[in-house]
Length: 112
Image (cartoon, rainbow, N blue to C red; front, side, top):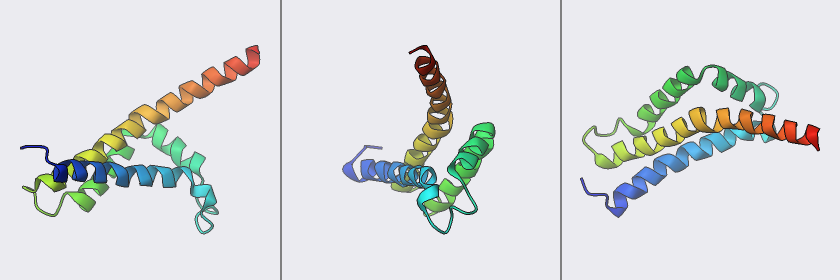
């Protein structure tokens, strides 16, 4: 399979969709109808404590949204892979490093 512009566009579309999802999760407190029931800190804490389950839920949603059109369609597969890369990066990269960076920042503030 050659990576044509169409396929790269599909890969970026899947990644962009999930980036928008994670940005929306970070801005839950600014959505009037949602802020009373959900808080960003609650959601992120649950995801951090249940990383594997959160990733399985995200990937099931990803496959339902992008991967059911035609199993042999490379654009659909690449759209799913773009979303998978963003989900793995957020759940196993961003959230753990966020905690480490906040600890380093707190220690730096105390020593200054």
